[in-house]
Image (tube, rainbow, N blue to C red; front, side, top):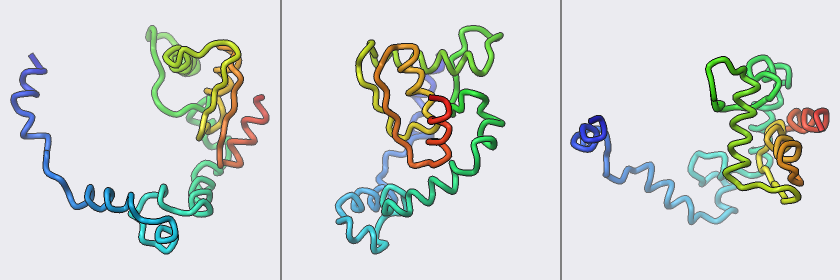
Length: 152
């Protein structure tokens, strides 16, 4: 049984010791915002000011929607899809995944759906169209917003 083998040998692949990195992260949670802006944060964009974060997002997501559409397909959705059979297309498996998300949220007609970091707004549009929700998507990406506006 695979589970028993993993359980028996867990000490070989799990380290229960606290690391310096974890300590730095924990301490950084108590640093006041003005110190973060002065550069005392712990190397994550969540510690940067809004302008820096917006710049990083723009450098990644604002490369052009055609760039992302080339490998994400018409859904413009990252991450895996849900396959019900091996003959399904990328669009179908992404539809399955978005439906599963909305079902797990127990989303009902007329309820409000807020997607923070909505990317190209595909999940928000799905919640509105397929589940009757009132959807709002929030993004810092100019290109993502253009795509959302075009598709809405």
